[in-house]
Amino acid sequence: MPDKKLDVRVYPIDEPKGNTKAFASVSIDDIAAIRGIRVVSSKGGLFVTMPQSYDNKADKFHDIAVPLSGLRKEVSKAVLREYKAQTALIPEDRGYQTPDMSAAKDIKVDEIKLGINVFPLEDPEGSTKAFASVNIDGLVAIRGIRVVESEEKGLFVTMPQSQDRTGLFHDVAFPLSGDLRKEISKGVLEKFEAEKSVDRKQSLGNRLADGAQKSAEHVTPVGVAAKQHHPGVLE
Image 1 (cartoon, rainbow, N blue to C red):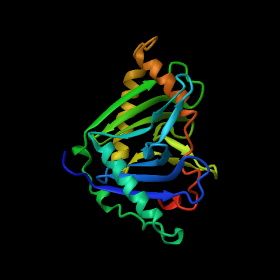
Image 2 (cartoon, rainbow, N blue to C red; image 1 turned 135 degrees about the vertical axis):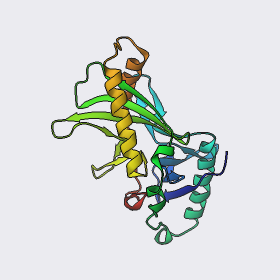
Image 3 (cartoon, rainbow, N blue to C red; image 1 turned 90 degrees about the vertical axis):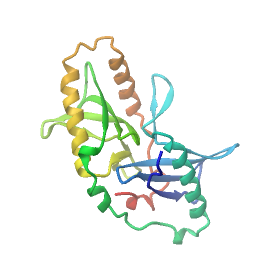
Image 4 (cartoon, rainbow, N blue to C red; image 1 turned 120 degrees about the vertical axis):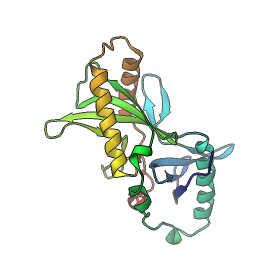
């Protein structure tokens, strides 16, 4: 596939207490961004993991967002290169300028292909009524999207989120264009309305949704050890 534009930003942890050595974020072709990527140390050396959530029922982790079409290897290589470059600098010299978002605003939404799946919850006990996943133009798959209902807003869509040490929530993966976000939200809600009228009793979708609900309740915190750097990352 043709080379894709990657904006990679890595934030080393000065005094890591575990095997996570850095957090990273990446934007792909000015279309979508992924935060909470980790640089992890093991006996085999350094490797990169995508942001994950824990599925309590299956007792395993699942990626929240995944670069597609061979991009995962390219993203991992780019993250490790940038990690080495940042760790070669003293902490005071690390950091990045605010990203230029003008290219994202020029994205033509009608040229972006979206693959949307929605899994309504059979008996929702809270405000979350369904989970969804979206494939954005064959570049990025985002899971753990929620259909939420409130008295003030009615039904609306949220990207997968994690909570930092200060208690604030941040999107883990998301489209960079406001118009594309609106298009995804519209598509998710339309699919939700169509799916919720279907008898999903004992269906595969219902089981997936149940697992997604449990995993979303155990989202691994992003930015836990990068408090001093993260506020300026791909905002």
